Length: 304
Ligand code: FES
Ligand SMILES: [Fe+2]
View 1 (cartoon, helix red, strand yellow):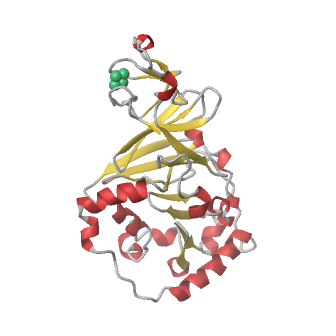
View 2: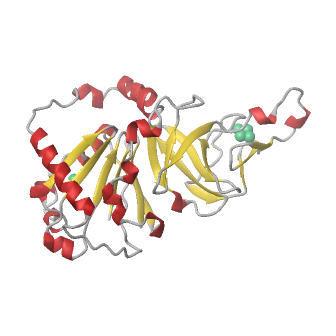
View 3: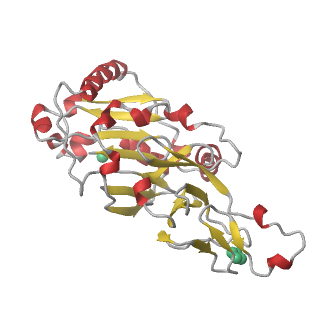
C-alpha cells in the first residue's frame, strides 16, 4: 500500500491509498451492492448539481487572521485523519506529524495502545522528537534529557526528584484524543477539553462502514511509502481542487482509462464528500475500482 502523502501549505494532509504491494482480488460486477448504492446516490447528486454557488471570498485564502481563526476553530476542534495503524506495527513505534503548525506524535506504547500527544517537552518546550518516525522504548528530550514513555507519561526528570512539590504525574506530555475507526485508520483531535466538543461520529457517522469499503480488506495492506510536497497555497485550495472534477477532462486526460467521467459525481454529507466514479464494464472486467472520499478539513483518501 502506498501510504499517505502529506502536503503542507500551511499544512494539510492529503491521504492517498493504493494497493501497490498487495494484490487485492476485486471482482466487481453490477450485482455488487456497493455499485448499486453508488448508482442510486449519484442520481440523487446529479439533480442537485445545477445550483450556482459562490466561492469563498478571496481574502479567506490570504488573510493570516483568517488562518489563525481556522487553526483555533477547525484544526484545534475537528478530527484529523492522519494515518493507518499498520504504520505502527510494534510497541515503541512512533510517527511525528505537523498539521497547521501543530506538532504532535502518534505512538504505540508497550501495551499496544496507540496514543497521541503534543511534541512539546513539558520542561522548556523543546520538541521531544525531531525525526519523522522511529521506535524507542522511551522518548528522551535532547535538551535536558527529560524522558517520557510512549503513553506520554514523564518517567525521568534529572534532579527534579529533589525539588519539593514537583509532581511527575502532572508533567506528562499534553495528550491528544485518538480515534481508531473500523478500518484501522487513526484520527486525532487536538481539542484540549477532556472530551472533544465534536464526537467523531457527529462528523463522520458511518463513513468508515460505507458500502464501497466492503470490497477491501484493510488488514491485508502493507505499508509502502510516504511522500511530501510543499507549495505556496492555502490549505483550502487542496480541498477545493480535490472536490471538483470540473478540471478533470482538461488536467487529467488519462482519467477516462480509470474512471467514467460521464458517470462521475459526489455526495456531500456531514463532514465528508464521497466521490463516486462508476467504472465502465471494461474497467470492472479488469478489476479496477477506486473508493475516493474527502474528510473535512484535512484529508482525502483514494482506496484501490
Ligand atoms: S526542554 Fe526538554 S528536557 Fe528541557
Ligand atoms: Fe486533479
